[in-house]
Length: 343
Image (cartoon, rainbow, N blue to C red; front, top):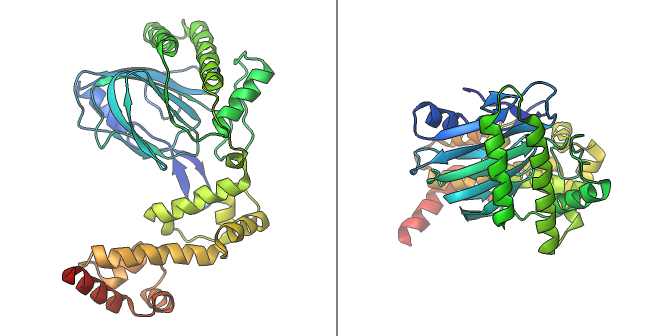
């Protein structure tokens, strides 16, 4: 696997799922043992086209020592249920960083950026399952695979827990550990689909156990996390955090499309959140990044920084920068560096 496949794309950009290149390289170099069933770009033995539709990948890795690789920031093409059986590993989302230890479960929704390792993964046995539930954004309706046999009421309750909470780390306990062990054994012993029935049963059991865990811990829910407002809020946060996104030649229509919304609704939500138009907010984000780079990358030219932050020309950059900060980019840099020297 030498390339990344987009989780979903708009006309101008895409969100990328993890291609697991580092993991594959580790396996090939004998640093780690891995077993997985997968489809698409995920590594592992291939699932048949019609086998367990919606299951993107299920597997585990087993490392007896710290690795020299980690899984960098990415999204998944579905809901990921990752379980650390033994060892320890650093796990991060765009909201928090935590240390996973034995019997910890990490849950990520399709729209959540996350990474595994800081920067490397530690020794341990880690399991994962990625289920495509037909969504890429918080406000969209979930569609569970047909082989999931939970009742409609249980499915709806479970969906609410996943959608209306951002909690990622859970201490799962012995029953969930045993279930993951059965799943990994079924995967490891599978020969051309011979264990798919067992795997389907165990995956249903796992989801039921997770539902029981949610209910036992009385997870507080927040319906606002399922709104279009939250979808737009996440996108705007990303513009601040991801310089790569700032370099795109965004139109309002493209930004709305990235959020899965119409232009009118998107513009309304941006105004509600920022009191700015989308174009004004985008320029503001680019200016803030550029101002930081001017100070912390003093060897980079003003023109280089302007282009790197998504401005079409250094002249336009200088104009909007002066309007916002009250001085030229060069003067801003000189004054900022002088202040840092004095302090």
